[in-house]
Length: 359
Image (cartoon, rainbow, N blue to C red; front, side, top):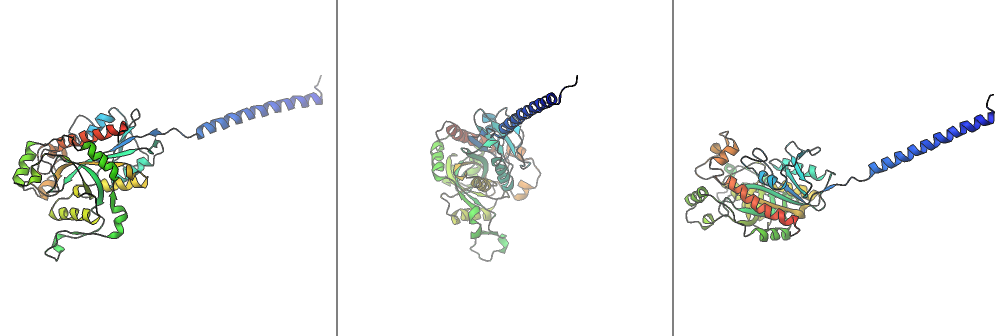
């Protein structure tokens, strides 16, 4: 017996309703899935970001560069994390248990600025409450500071943005500098750090015991006999960092650096030369973090030559830096490794205070 037209209609209608209900169920499930996917992913909060610039060899177990001791204390065992669209020099480690990140930027202004900016743009991490602790080494202002000193940086200046000439081109016998300012660059060639944070950091560190070596003491006595600044033990001090892309030495650039700090009206005298700090500050400012930067630099050599060294003997012999630093050359004497320990001891006090909410 064939089903009636009515029964066939009812059956088809029932199938359609079943199909419709199934489609609605699937649509609701899909909407819930899309909604879940659209929810903001919880970001990893970074409380302290340690920013060294270079490492000589491995991250542990050999001659230390700027990163090794900090890595061992705060990120030991953490895997390296690739930063999207970053420089090839950038290396990032994150300890999610403590909220401490470590960014190894690479040397020079370009590597430092781009590495930091690429990390700060990564939406996997929350940098809204981050304090950047920039750590590194540099050359000392000859005549004021000694190898082993740790400088709490209060201002950063760019030694390259301006006008420069060779000493032989100067016509005035009284001229002592080969750099001349250009006011149009001032907006990004000078960056003061947060003065209140700098002072709190200095007060926290001013009594920190620092190391020196017998070689450094002897060389200072031989090169600067009777000069009080050269006979003291290393200490923590405040000062201005002057940043250049080239690692320079010599009397002309020594005079340039002092003038640059004076020209920009820095709160403290020129203390240290480096290759990155102005770029770190400019990148931090782009993300509203310029008032949350603490910069520490340990001095491992002078901005002028010692022990009869020359540019050729320092920079053209092809000697590996780590070997030179370990072998007591005229560039670093034997202060480099104890200098890294001085930097770490001061940096650890600051980082621990930040983690405990005391700074």
